[in-house]
Amino acid sequence: MPSRPIVFSDIDFTIVFDSEIHPKTVELIEQVRRQARFVLVTARSKAECEGLPDIPNDGFIAENGAAVYLREHGRDRLDPEWEQQMHKRQSVLEAFRDELASRGWCMHKKLHAFSSCIDSSGMQAADVQWVQDNLPAGLQLEFSRNTAGRYIEVFPAEAGKDKAVHRLCARLGVDLQATFGLGDNSNDLPMLETVKMPLAPGNCHPDVRALVTQRGGFVAPLEGHAGAQEMLRELLRLL
Image 1: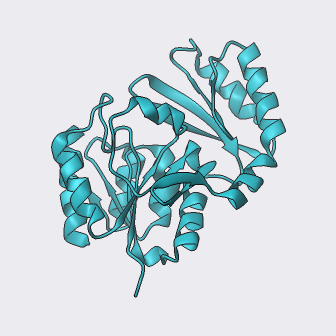
Image 2: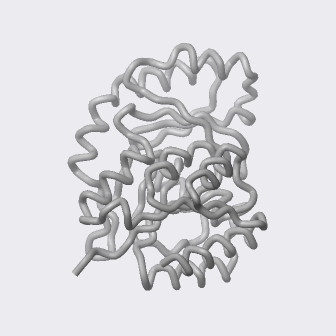
Image 3: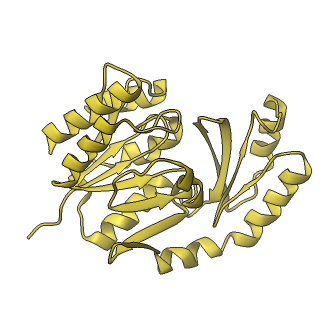
């Protein structure tokens, strides 16, 4: 019997807006889960998701892929082999994190990554450029946003939403041809490039819109909660 398809879904500004998820969105996600696994993919750590409303799901990829959780007996357990790979960069990661903290960046420590809000840290374009110019080998930098503002995200080079998608598919025995991706921002591009079919809400970043359109995916005409629901209805049609 073939494995069920997997839907990989970003959280902020894709299905959750202003830290809220619409009841109709929850209902549609539950309908999707009857036909496919629904895996959350986010730059947040698992702990940072505790303040969000409950989102029905069948798995979890956190910290831009630096933490992959396997669902076993109804509980999320860190993938032990993935953990070993992430630990290789831990000392470099922590040293760079401490360097940025000394320069005034407000740190959000995670398991195998860190982030900092550009806006609440009071940083300017030159400060962001310094981070880009001085990023140590073995680490990668991406940008994200949530209801608090714009963020820098630093995590191991071996991580990434795309690599985590490959890892989870391999562990679950699911072919990439049976994968879907939902995302809105530029840091979702690696995931949206990896899955077979990308979808996005109408409020997505222009680069996301261009990629999804070029790959024959679906961009919802509407934004926000209504756009999320349009996207999920189209996903149900494709499933």
